[in-house]
Length: 325
Image 1 (cartoon, rainbow, N blue to C red):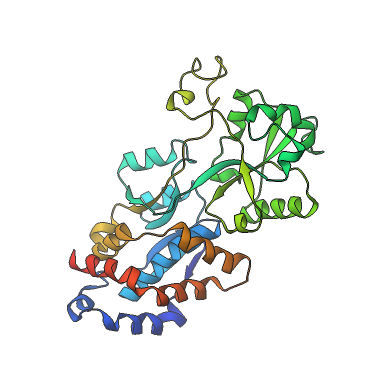
Image 2: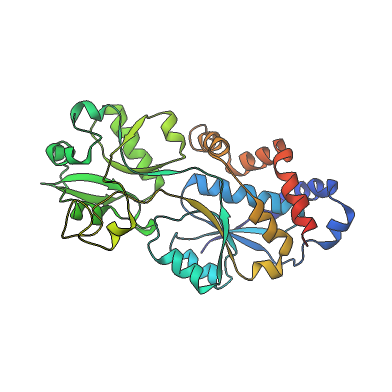
């Protein structure tokens, strides 16, 4: 795991920012000078969600570091206290990993992140002209040749999320009897590259994607309408369109939560409460993602500038967190 600390050159900023806090509060935090280590996964929205929270913690006086971690391996690190928090966990794409981590009690659900997400198979809107039966999933087999590539021949290709994010595409494809193969992308950047290349050449593309994301401001998409999700779909083969298989449905509506190491509440109680209170919305995250990923803004500077400009948003969380000690 790679550890990134922003304390060095940013120490003065953090010190100046804490001047407005009550004297009593300054005497109480940080409860420990040990660094709070925040998980960094491999998409920009998660970087922003986590680093804005980390910036606020720094301005409270905490030492914050960022640990680059895989989406699934991070749960072991958090349960063992090697990483302490993550501010954007997509709860619907982790299978049993998240429920098991929470059941164990060493990883704590801090509540919803504030984002309103959607996720699934999508396609650039112009693709509907090439496959007129869309967005109905039953049109996919009629158009499989349209999405065929040399690596998936004779099947169509669905560009999938990176393998370590967790994926349901192969199960859905098999259960629905679709003539397709899910091909994992290497990263979020690879997914974006696929969308841009397809858009530029008006090429057919099926790709697992999500919102909030800045790309939807540049490339309008529609979503394949899979059979409606029901929990029975995952367990009862007799449920749904395929009486012999599970997973013959779409996905559960995604949610995003915040998580933390269980020991954080005792070691850094004010920081823990701040993270419980912390929220980020689509309206905040999307333009910041665009600034970083499209306009080339520096991630650290973008985070710091947002915190500078929005003290009225985060100051009440700090005040409540300090009062809760």
